[in-house]
Length: 100
Image (cartoon, rainbow, N blue to C red):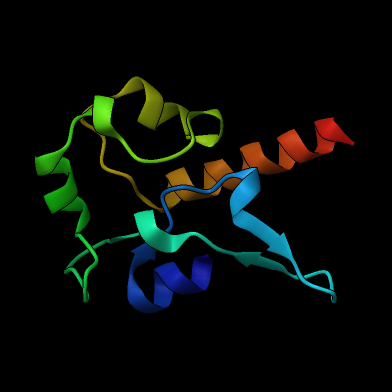
């Protein structure tokens, strides 16, 4: 996820327990990138976050609410950023630890 953000400016925007797979070597792999958004300019078929914010409201926000960051849930006007994806990772890890 961090490579996707730093190398090409892409945010996942829907990190959840169902969007993380573990391969045989124990490495995590993110799937379900269909809600991903470009931080700056849209790539092929990818909507920029500014365009997404203009077209949608908090009622229409993408993501799994259980794993969304607190700022995204509490501020309808907030644009999704890397901190939100990282907080989602925290919530996924906490959820997974509690299920053990």
